[in-house]
Image (cartoon, rainbow, N blue to C red; front, side, top):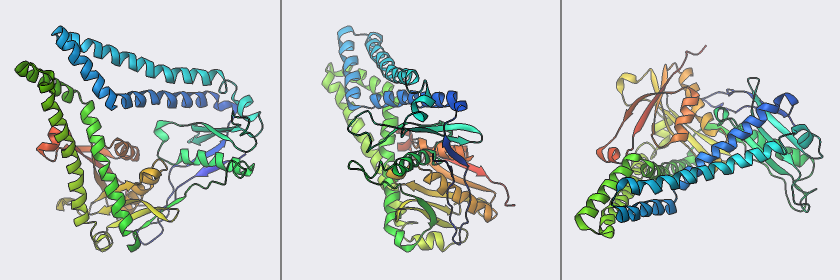
Length: 423
């Protein structure tokens, strides 16, 4: 059975050297892992309840149904409290219903295959369950089993029960677990039969920027920034302040006009203007970057002292980037570096690439004698915030870049990480 250890390769060019990320190893299940495996699986499934509920809340159908229900009851009863009551009931029922899906699924698994893990996964032919172990603790799992469809058995395997503890994500553990199953299947010829073929997951490496990376770097950066507008829109729609403001505006319009349609009109106008404003913030930011530092990448990042831009390369293609630059504040220069332009193609996220890029900047700063690394991100970029905090960055300041940004509840977060001197 397959076992392995995980690590990430760091640049070995003039602006970096090889470093090792947090160690972990993949090994077959042991009886002592029983409770940890069941707990990690259950926690992973229950996390999906919140994600599913948030997806439901941001659905266009929900955005149409709940206000319509509120307005109908408001017109019929003339009471805001009575109008809010059915909305609250619908949300509570929806949460219980969504939560029950996850709970039922977990209970079913714990009563069936995860009740006797050894008998299910290690006692059957062409099946196995592996765990990821870090610092002596089990932090992830994955299984390979025969598919339920009899026609698929003998030519295919099913990857099942993949889960990694939340605190250990972003280190490439899920990717390593997946590759373990693929190798297990390949060794048994399950990926070369009539219903499958050999699968090779992309490896990646971090290296300094080269001139041939120009278009890819600019495109990846622009694509990443353009994702911010939908995230801002989602945050705005979920905000209690937004709900109260739109409700107040509707009530004022209804009282003034006596018409629901006329009362809804200013709300529709405000939402359209808000969406266009969010799009323009991202578009303007991208255009500014493409006209300034990303216009001549070599001179900006490789021609200046103690600066660099690295790319992540997978299967011969650039899939991510990050830069280290001198901060704009003159008092910080010489002691602090700024981590900038971190972005990874959407299809390559969750493989530890963003973490490896970030650690490249941290090591670069340490090697050049800097005392700290600073960076900026936005309030809506939750995954980036979690990554930086796992690396040890702390939030030191929050600012709103403009009145428009304040109205849209869009804030810039400033993070800083103090680094030890190189040994």
